[in-house]
Image (cartoon, rainbow, N blue to C red; front, side, top):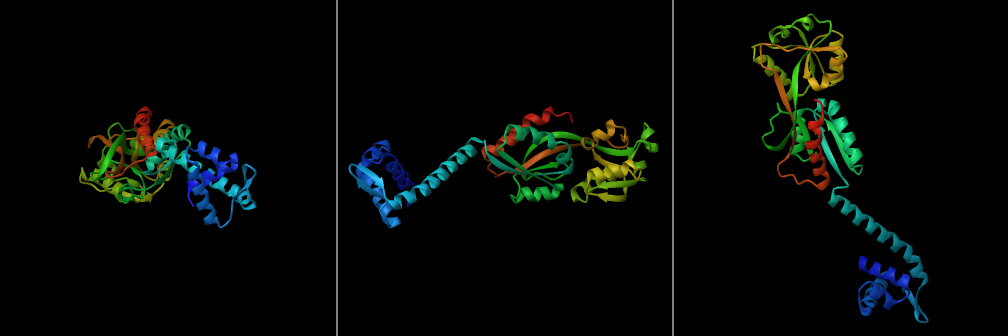
Length: 299
């Protein structure tokens, strides 16, 4: 059974004439007759009968017609769906992102993107930088959003924004009132470590290695909000991206320190993808959207 046979069957049923159906389909009448002959042989029943000069459906044909309508409607729906994919109006994209970007940067961007392209579905998950690299490499996600402390030489890279990294203490901490602070002093304070992710742990350790010290890790939490709450309670200091602490800084709950014994810590946030990856138009729309919208954010 072929789609063209079903189209011909439906047209003959509508026009009740082989001749008129052939004209409307730009076919010859023998072609129409041949297609219907093959269809009837496959179905094992006559679908049409002559009623004077008109062609009429048999009982089998009347029973068959609603099913043909459904099949052809499904084919048309699938054709439109593929057209939407081709034009980039419909599709899916999977993203894995580090926690600070996911919680504090992406919500506003995703809201705008979904409002503009409601039929493009973005599936988002959080992970550590090393895990994201593996997810992208193994094609388990389409793109990853990581920090520049993660090795990314094997991927195509799109820089998104710069994120200042630094130590934070609660507003009542003695160091919060000091203009001159050093990492050497912070090394003696209890550290509330963000995450158990190897790439971030190594990054934090590398900061202290610059002054020949090791941090005194008291707690490790995967939740960045949990880390901030611990610091607010005076249980220690933490090192996190400034984008993750904007609200607490504005509300006076956390104080950003600027140690003078090492240069300012700036991390690029990057979008990575496999170099061989071929993107659909819908997926490319998301990438283009990020390039336009991220610079507009006040980060």
